[in-house]
Amino acid sequence: MDEKIFSISRTYDDISYPGINKKYFQQFKEFYKNKIKKNKIDYIYLFFPGEVLTSTNLDHMVFNYISKKCFLIKKIDQFTIELKLKKNCNEISIF
Image (cartoon, rainbow, N blue to C red; front, side, top):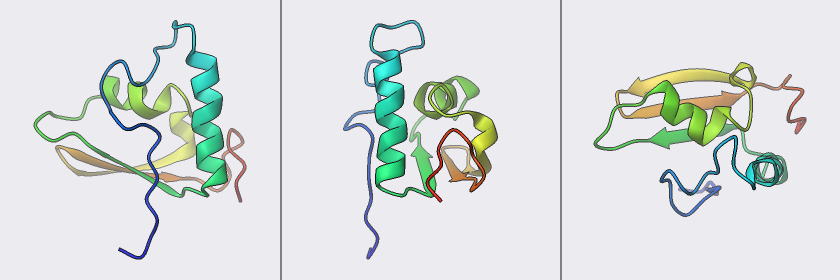
């Protein structure tokens, strides 16, 4: 691939992303948004091999940090989802 790939975390388990009521949630939320801005990320792909995507998975990995309304959501299959960041998202102004 000729494109750079960025990852917010090295691992994607329940403890890699702090929950809403956790001590470091706000800090991680700002870190998350800043990574997207800095790296000019347009798409986020989530793969859940061996388990079915749920709204809980998506909230925990993305929507707790950036509102669902900021994305165009495309389900590729039962394990994969593509999130395209909308250009008019006020939460993240990268365009």
